[in-house]
Image (cartoon, rainbow, N blue to C red; front, side, top):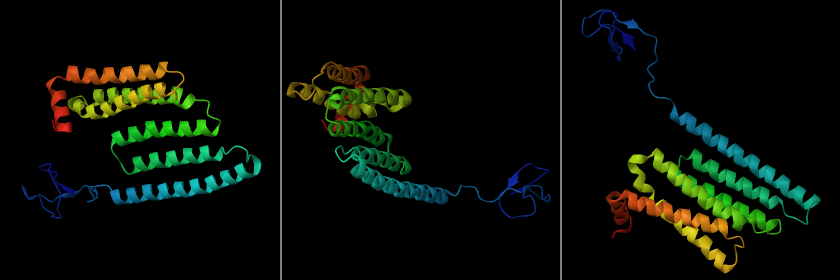
Length: 219
């Protein structure tokens, strides 16, 4: 890139004279490469992900072996492997630049499944469904509200996401009637908040919310 000291313009091609005043151009010393090497960055990220996966497999094998030799009565290594799988999935979602909705769903409810598995392996005290399940629903409600604040111009796009949260909240109430949840207070609170947030979006959103629902459900 060259610059004309007389006109003050910058010239991108390889000419030696200014096209305006024909003055001899000065070389600014800047490179011609305008865009960063994105391909090199992607290759580096993919390599680091494969390296992390390889190390995770080695560590998982070592943990299973230690569990079998020293504590065969409790398979706590399954919890460790589940945590590794959860971490690998989340890392993959971030390296592949997937949508934030997928990240939120997988992040919150994947963590919930991990808690249920850990609860089962350690003897099942019920804390995973009594407390972690409704907590996950409350976190999902909070995520929707934060996303609406961040993306206020397109807040109606989260209506369908919130409807899914409501369905999970109703599932929690169903688990109470089935006897799977023995401490129902937090589940009832989570379900109530989910419904209130959805109704608030529909009522306060007015025509915009109704149009979004009609577009989504083709009614």
